Image (cartoon, rainbow, N blue to C red):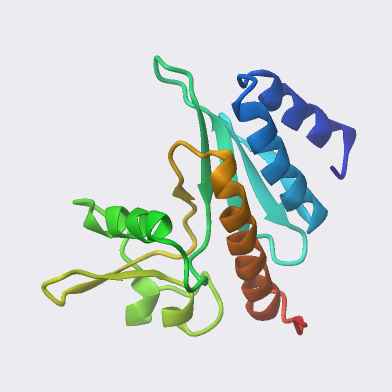
Amino acid sequence: MKTKKQEDLVNEFLSRLNDESRPIYQNIIMYLSEIGYYPYKQRSYIVFKHDLHNKQMAKTGIRINKDKSAFFALRFSACNGYSDRFADLVKAAVAEENFNEAKCIYNNCDFCKGVATTHVYSYTFQNGKSESHCGAVALEIPNVTADDIGEIKKLIKEEHEYLLKHEAGMSVI
């Protein structure tokens, strides 16, 4: 962590998790921190942003509903070749009645840099209809398990390289 306040923020969050979830979230948070994504309090949750581009990579927290369960959301819109689990998250996002349509596809948004089709969530349904969801949004990954950690880290790395190249203007090796 960058500061004591950020470390305390994460430790307070982790202390509220059960023994099964705590190491999973800790592993992901430590990886985010290692590559420069630091936690910031935003409303009732924690977001992870990088100083070089100030874009949100992930979001986590405790739900304020009855079950008070933990959640984790990840931005992986610039990633390719992810598993069916993550493809299903994209499908669910674009299938929502009021989904966050990617306005950049129609040149109606300039929040993200790079060619629009390279940083939006896209899904093509069996009927051939394709929908695109705003890529700046972190999609919630329900029921994160230890089996997900490897793919989550891979997606973080791929998205991070995209953001460094297109948002921060850095060459990526």
